[in-house]
Length: 250
Image (cartoon, rainbow, N blue to C red; front, top):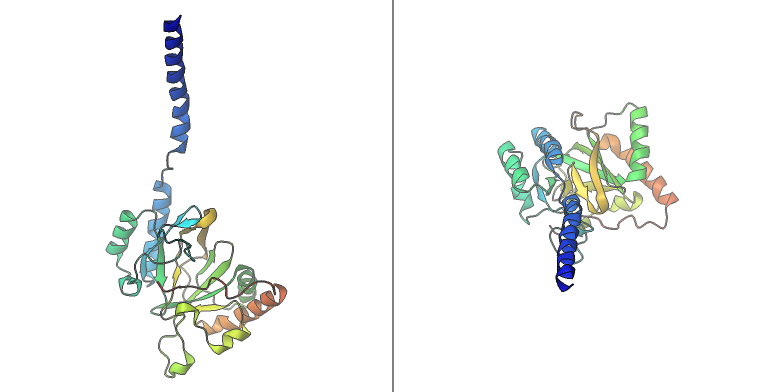
């Protein structure tokens, strides 16, 4: 009788292990070949039009791969503190980064070739529709998750009067930004993620208008964007328009 129980338990354990095998296979990491094949061409296309790139952190569920406790910008900041000097358009280097860091997002350093006008998503969609209706030249545009829309423009470079310009680093804004809440102008000393990028919570950053569009003068977009931001702020007074501005020291 004891031998029969032993054989039964042995059979039961074997069947249990076999039944768990399909579950284990379903839990294996998904093949990322498709994502990689889509990501590399888009990164190289960004570099080809002059956007300097550098590796960035990536999300791990709702946390950040940097493992910093309470990271304020998970999956959105550069890996290296030397991102400004590291940023490059070199095809070979970008391919090596993409292959060696298959989960990494990438940032593009602004203020060298391009700037980015960064607005709340709702305001950005309204402004984009208005700009296109007015036949104003609009360059590449990206949606950043469910919160922001980014308008890529040519950089203003270094103006003759330095008082007319400012670095975006550490959320520095000109005085006039108080009149246009919600707008961030990424220029010298700043960066933004470049699509495709994965964000916490299963969200992503994606192109709405691609890199085939030329970079426009930012001033041609500014009035429409600020009007849209002012309207959005008036309709959403409880929203902190300066919350989670970045970069934050990286």
